[in-house]
Image (tube, rainbow, N blue to C red; front, side, top):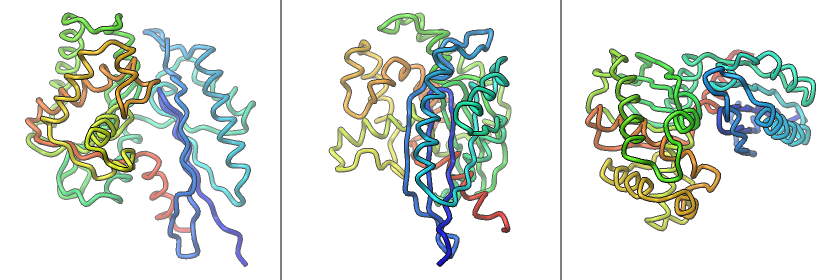
Length: 310
């Protein structure tokens, strides 16, 4: 009897570290058997100097060590571990990767913004029947935009802002002031104005990825009393519903945001800045709906593996 194959992906982002493990059968078909997430906030306090901080690195390495223990329970595992914006931007990147390797044995590959966006596209296109759309992945320290036309990848860009670094740069208080909100929205709008090909996405639906964006769907599904509110793949929301949730979140202080059903407590301090990019994009493109994808970078990495000749 042939030993079962397993494929695993660690996605080390700016806000969270995630592990997914699939069992691969004899017909090369994957079955997801593990999905773990740790909110490590790796990009916390990086500042303009782009230095990963000791406490953030320690939290992250502890989470990765836990992932490694989980992986050790499976036979015949192929692991791909990738890091995105926080590590990509860090001036002390090499030292951090060395510590990870020494402590956990995990070798992490740092991918470019374009590579991250392309993996997002691969994950979405293999799991959703989209034809034309803008895929938008808002992370902790970057936002990837992918223009899809006739199911083909046409344009990609990675913008160097996300929920954590926008919060640290623009939002100083428990309750967001009008001036802070104005400065933040203006910054995002000005950045989008510099992406020349976005006009080609006018009126297209947005496929939303990333923890902040998915939180919109989870809040809405809790409001509509879905039995499994976290099962959001393919879920659609009107922009009216998106705006209503954002307005509600905006009126609350941190303690009140932590109590919103569907919003993870550890995300409550960065959710406003995390939602600004997609709320701004909706208006920018005159888009009437969001469609949510559960599958992005990790699924894209899986499909690349499955489609590579042995």
